[in-house]
Amino acid sequence: MAQITLNTLAHTYTDQPRGPEDYAIREMVHVWEQGGAYALLGPSGCGKSTLLNIISGLLEPSNGEVLFDGKRVNELRPEERNIAQVFQFPVVYDTMTVYDNLAFPLRNVGVPEHKVKSKVYEVAEILELTEQLKRKAKGLSADQKQKVSMGRGLVRDDVSAILFDEPLTVIDPQLKWKLRRKLKQIHEQFNITMVYVTHDQLEASTFADKIAVMYEGQIVQFGTPRQLFENPAHTFVGYFIGSPGMNFFEAEVTPEHLRFGQSILPASRHMLDYLHEHGIHKVTMGIRPEFVHVWEGKNDDAYEVDVDFVEDLGTYKILSFKFHGQVMKARLSEDQKVPSGQAYISFPEQWTKVYVDDYLVEVHA
Ligand SMILES: Nc1ncnc2c1ncn2[C@@H]1O[C@H](COP(=O)(O)OP(=O)(O)OP(=O)(O)O)[C@@H](O)[C@H]1O
Image 1 (tube, rainbow, N blue to C red):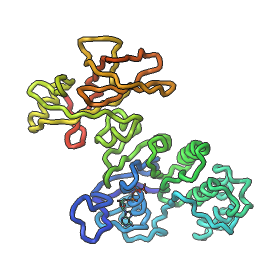
Image 2 (tube, rainbow, N blue to C red):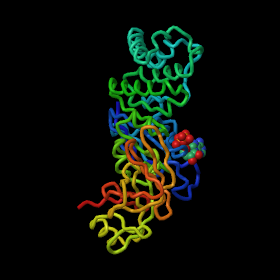
Image 3 (tube, rainbow, N blue to C red):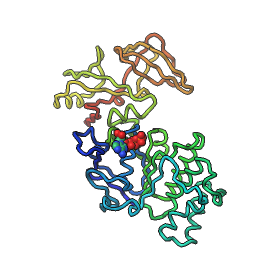
Image 4 (cartoon, rainbow, N blue to C red):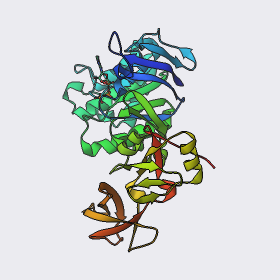
């Protein structure tokens, strides 16, 4: 078991990179603590698999170091790193029985047969594979095969970490949540560092205690699901997490206010001072639909906006409206009055975030 440190790590697939855009992993420093349940979340092509393959040793990074418990492992081959990796598609030996598949990683390192047996039975029980142990892997369904793949990662006590690369892609949707729960349970039981790669925010937040959000080869935020929701550190996190994502609009910094169209927006004196001191004239403001306050009627504190349409999603509704011509969304609870024509909204200061060059500006009093 190990703490995994990525020290000024970067990777490019091109021989002569011209700039950061040619890097699949842009220089990063990151620590996965021993025993943590982590998700690496991001859209297709952001560099998730590249990062996992560097940790497991399948890929050599162009720059920087990978450390396990403080020791550099760059020169170690994958099998010397004791990392178990579970891929999108199951890796099983079809002609072997489920038992032999699960026993394989243990026999490979010379574990005595009586220990192999107890470990295989323990893992098979957790994954509900006991009844299949004598069957050939060939006849199994795709999700059973993937469970065998996961089991092969779990049988060894000496693994430093288990890396999951979109492991539930081939799994039947109804079984997905069950296997996710199972993985979580396994994590609690085994206290192993686990990194779970996905592009699905629900999968990430049900599995992980902390999520690293990846965008264009960088980890733009590392935090609990709640931190990512309440305080997105980067506009991409605001956009990618939540459904629908955060509303964004460009505001102008005036001596006394932040302004969007004719409207004055909430901002603290400290924020305004900070922006002036740094010569910033334009900012991006972000507010989640959940935090937009929709009033019952006209109000001195509210902006008047044009209602576009309302989507009824069962337990809540999404109000789409235009604020100075820009389309935005607000979440209405089931019992909230649905406005038509005009709506009256406000943005509580606590939840109205300010971004400069895509990064959150945090100013403390
Ligand atoms: N072997 C390779 N050779 C060249 N470029 C590659 C190679 N593998 C990945 N890339 C590029 O590196 C970037 C990151 O890819 P990577 O597969 O790590 O992303 P990902 O987040 O895992 O995406 P996905 O979810 O689609 O697997 C992409 O621009 C991709 O095209």
